[in-house]
Length: 118
Length: 463
Image (cartoon, rainbow over the protein chains, first blue to last red):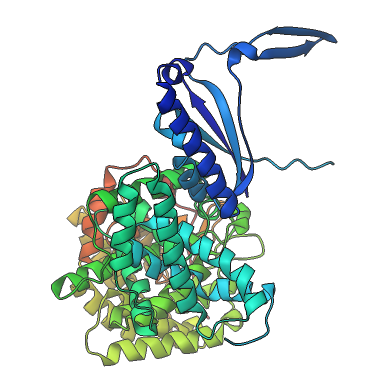
């Protein structure tokens, strides 16, 4: 089954890292992705730019509205994702626990809903 | 290296060997999650290398060795970021790598005992056994127990953390501990069995066949550790499973033992179950599972309900009542006495039990009493035998909730199972512990079943 690991963290927390701390975390994150690739667990992964760069789009009654950033009031924001292939939810949770950013933020593990045309 | 083979062969070896290799990797790596990843890595390597280089002569040993090296590699790569990784990798390198068959079978036993460790709650023991020992996925276990997968996932995560934090040893208990710890293992397997056995009606048909999984687990355990009670439990499950096709009518109603079409009983299972009972009885160390299996075997032997050896069943209940003085055992015995001696004798026993108070709130006791009283109002049979019959008119209610299932079918319903029947003292202790935790879905379902009103009931003669 495929699971999406959504990585949330507080941007201010990461902003407080020194340059070398930030570089170490980035290298570790890249190494973990490589580890997942090596073991065939990896489907796709990306870090996201900050919410300041984001737009939120809605269409209501045929009219589109676009606003700055996500509306979320929470301090943790979606900062990246890893789509993995795992045999079950516990295996996915174990993999999610290995994501370096799980030490600083949180990882939401969501089973992929396969959509079928009816 | 043997030659030939393809990806299909790797799949077949995966199905046959994965859980064994996993058990050995847990021993070597001292870590469930690392072992799981190592197992996966080993099979990835096998799928790449075997079709190209030829199949190893001992695939299991190859896989254990590959898994161990993959785990060390993983820890070394991690050591670039975490200081502890290198130490762990070195520790694992030093550990012995025993992969000969004897040691590997021991590893499976070790794994069972670890997953059923008394420090883990009953729900966690079941989830851990089904996933780690047997290899069901979290989602499959959740479907089987009608709970959401995250609930099962959390049980497993917490159980693994508990095993790690409490340093629960990966070992087969020895000496005096073995008996009590084995009871916990048997109880887990029987719980899984009953979960599946109770589910054989209505919407529950879509649930994975837990009874079959439990029989396989029981078979594995009896093979690894031929303790008389392990044999007894396997016999009991086979004898109950043999009646599966006859247990539920076309409408999904429970069919009582007395009314079952015995031509539907699975004779091969009965033969195997009966032989296991004989093997267990021959050891002269007879426990509660063996006794229940022996009772089931007496039923299985009768060509029709009227020909049941009730005197033999009462004798077995006499011993069982001494081994497990639970009130519900006494109730089952009282019903057997009714069948042997007539309703007056049974009624007196049931009234004594109700007066004792332990069963006063237990609807099976009241319906058993009503049944005995109804029988007594009729003329005694001439030449015929006493016979119960009941029809469950409530339709969709589960067989386990039927008030009659405990009487003629020696398989206890869920309610008595929580009261200590049939697992004996050890299980009762853990059940008492578990009683406060009604939050889990499994125990919630149990309480619902217990509170369900008794189904309408009638008694009649056998011809």
